[in-house]
Structure formats: C-alpha cells, structure tokens
Image 1: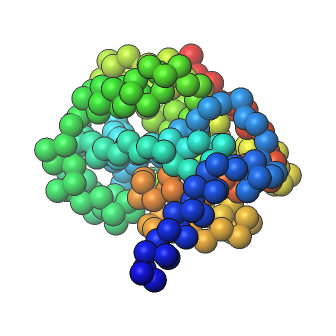
Image 2: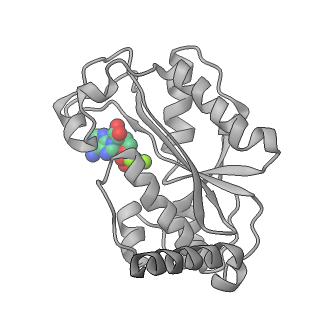
Length: 226
Ligand code: AMP
Ligand code: MG
Ligand code: MG
C-alpha cells in the first residue's frame, strides 16, 4: 500500500510538472521551435595523427520538448566506419566505444536513412518545427558534411542549421565557454555519465539547454551551412 502511494505521488508529480509547464517553470519563455534535437557525434580519431577521412561512430539525438523540458524520444545508433575499420586505442579510451560496438553496425548511409525514418515519425509527418543543438560547430559544420562529401552522400536540408549552445551560453552569461564541462560547472549542474560518450554528452548538453531555458533565454539558430 505504501509502495502504491509512493508510486502514485511520483506519478502525480510528473503529471503536474508536465501539465503546468509554465507554472512549474515560470521563467521558461515560448520558443521559436516545437522541439530541440540535441546531437553529439563521436568519430574515429587518434592522438598521434589526423585520421582522414574521419568517420562518425556514434550518432545520438535527443528530442526535447521546451514546454515540458522532457526528452520525448531518443535516436541512438553506433555506426561502422568504412575507411578506418579498426578503432585506435586512443579512440576507445576517449569515447568508451569498443570495436564490438561498431562491428556489424550499419554504415553511415544506412544510419542516415534510419535517422530520416525517425525524423519522419517524430517530426516531419507531424509538421513540428525543430532545430539541432550541438556543443560547438564541429558536428554539423565540419564532421557530417566532410564525411558526406568524401563518400558522396547527399546531406539532408534539415542538417543545415543549428544552435551552437556555446554561443547561447555566451549570450546569457557574457562569457564564451571552452566546452561542455565549464558550462556545467558555471550552471552548477552535475556532470553525468562518461565525457566523450555521445549519448552521455547529449544528456549533459540537454541539461545545459534546460538550464538556459529556465533562465528565460529564447534560443535562435547560430550556425548555417550551404
Ligand atoms: P566530443 O563530442 O567532445 O566527445 O568529441 C567528438 C569527437 O571529437 C570525438 O569522438 C573524437 O573523434 C574527437 N575528439 C574529441 N576530443 C579529442 C581529443 N582530445 N583528441 C583527438 N580527438 C578528439
Ligand atoms: Mg561533441
Ligand atoms: Mg561527445
């Protein structure tokens, strides 16, 4: 009985948070987008040489509703690299992604198709507006376009604008941050999980996004590519 009561209380609390987003988060303002897609790629790398072409090995995206501050859906795929199939010890140590996690996984083309199916279900077919949120410009200005150019893969138009959360953070605080860790520190948000795991990085970037939303910030796109 006591367990049931506790469960009901927890559930009521959640419903209450969701139903009265404006009341629970009175400082959160209306945004220009229905959803934020927090994205953080991990890619092949080494500490002694530049890997060319660099290839995405983890492709995680969180769909966050700014009205409720909840993550409503997750896309998460490990990706098999084609040019440099063997991950370097440095890359494994940095990202926590071991060889077994990429072997047998879809290549980038299939991953992009799976992602597009997810996009259709979650956003495109519902006519919901959205933008990507990344920490820095590397993911969508450099990494994805350069890999697609190298393997002759078209880049879908929805990848061509995004929010670099470092710029949003600088708008709010007046300080341009070096990275995710200093932003978490400044906002007094505990770091969770493993740094340089793509999915954990997404969760931490989402926490920063929520922190800035709660400060009343209205996000706008900061990055564009052609
Ligand atoms: P991050 O989102 O900061 O985890 O980094 C994304 C990708 O950038 C990693 O998967 C690596 O390919 C590369 N990277 C990040 N930090 C380093 C580093 N210290 N040395 C070499 N490559 C790095
Ligand atoms: Mg990153
Ligand atoms: Mg990362």
